[in-house]
Amino acid sequence: MLILTRKIGESIYIGDGRIKVVVVEVKGNQVRLGIEAPPEEKIYREEIYQQILEENRTAARGDVTEASLDQLSIGLKGAPSKGVQGGATPKAVSFKGRSVGATRGGEQSSGGSDKQEKGASSPKLGGQK
Amino acid sequence: MSEEQKNSGETITFQSTRFGEFTVPAEVLIEIPSGVIGFPHTTRYVMLDHKPPFSWLHSVEDPNLAFVVVDGFEFGPQFDVKPPIGDKDTDLKAEDEYAILVIVTVRPDPKLTTANLKAPVFVNMRNRKGVQTIIDDPRFSTRFPLWSEQAEGDAAAQKTEEKKPENK
Image (cartoon, rainbow over all chains, first blue to last red; front, side):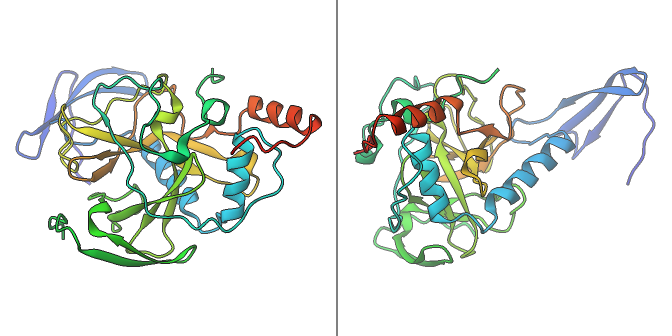
C-alpha cells in the first residue's frame, strides 16, 4: 500500500489526474475527504460496500425454495399463508422500463397481465421511519 | 466478451438448478458488465417470471446463481433513487428508459424477508445492460422488511373472515 502524508487542503491525483482526492478537514480521529471523479467512477465507503456484498451473497444462497417464495407472495398479499400452490414454472419475461424522469407509482404497468391487484400487495415504503 | 446480442432468432440455452433447462431468445439477455457486487465474473442474466411481485434475475452462466428481485417502481414515489446517468457499464443517458430491480433476501422464515433498497440494479432498456449501484441515502436500507405489519394484519383479518382467495 502506498502511504502519503498530506496537509489540509492538499490533494492527490489518481489515474492521470482523472480522480482527485483532497483532504478537507481533520478533526480528532476523523478525516473529511473531497473526491473529484468522472461520474462513471464508483466511489463507496468500504463498510457499505462490504454490507452490500454480504447481502448479495445471502440473497444468492441456494436455499430459496419456490415454496418459500410462493408463501411470501401470498403473505404479501395479505392472504392466509397456507395453501402454497406449487409448480408454477417461471417463464422468461421481458420487463418494461420507464423513462428517466417518468412519474412513478401512479401508473399501472400496462404490459403485464399478471400485474393487477397491486394495492395492498405491493411492498410499500410507507411505514418506514 | 460483450459482443452485441441483437441478432434476432438466436437463442440461448441454459441450466437452472432450481427450474431446469431454459431456452430463451438472445435478445432478452441482460448483461451486467461488472457483475452483481460479490459476483464479478457472472455477467449475463435473464429475468424469469415468478408470482408477482417477484421475478428471478437468473444467471445463464451459473446454474445455481439467481436473485429474487422486485420491480423497484413497486415501492412507489418514496423510493426516489436517481438513475446512474453517465455510468459506463450501462451507457445510461438521460433519454434512456430504464428498469430498477431490487434484490430480495428471502429467509427461511418468510416474515424476515427483506429487500435491498440500498443497492438496486439499474438496467438500461436500450442496450439491456445493467449495473448494481449503491445509493448513498440513509433512508434506504439493505434490509427493508417486505413483510409489513399491515399485510400481516390483513392476513389475520382475512383468516377470521373466511378464506377467500383474494388474488384471482
